[in-house]
Image 1: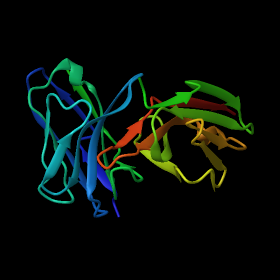
Image 2: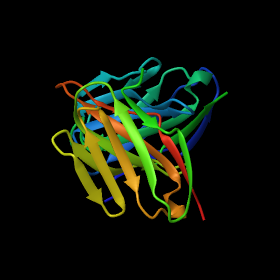
Image 3: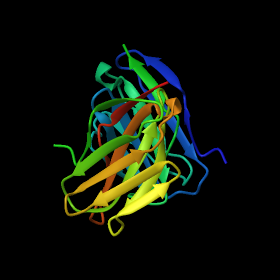
Image 4: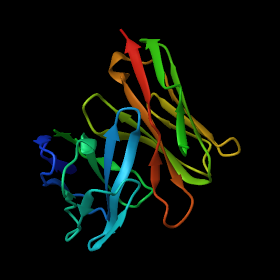
Length: 112
Length: 112
């Protein structure tokens, strides 16, 4: 059981570039979510999904897109990277939106 | 303002001492959870306490919940250097469409 996996671990982008952060889970969880973590800000919810084909916006969705074509995968797309998107990104999965969250190891993103 | 606010923001204790961390929240909840994050890693779930529970134990961890005061405490007994980490409380707010909301975290340093 790998749990929640994220790739890449670290990425450097130039302003305006696009990229996809990958997230996969093997626990058959319906609920998946993306957070960003910035110093002094705690965890902020970007987007979430309650099941395949269903996604919704969180607290800070601007500049990010998601899709959920399968139960296992929940990629996060940065459309046109900005320095303000420099952060650590965590993917999490859970049996339900308010139940125990299982976090991936994170992706550290630097936008120059 | 934050739904879940931890207190203190930082705590430094000697190995062997007990560490007490507090979380206050504003609205009605279904459950409250505590997570730990070691430096550079993802969050790890520690304990979940439901709104109809007052106290839960897990190893050296003891969590209390006082819904009348809208507050929770996490006690780590006989702390170890390996307990050095950030600790977050997360609240599962009442409501069908609500989600888990994380606080900004407490930095715990345990001196050997």
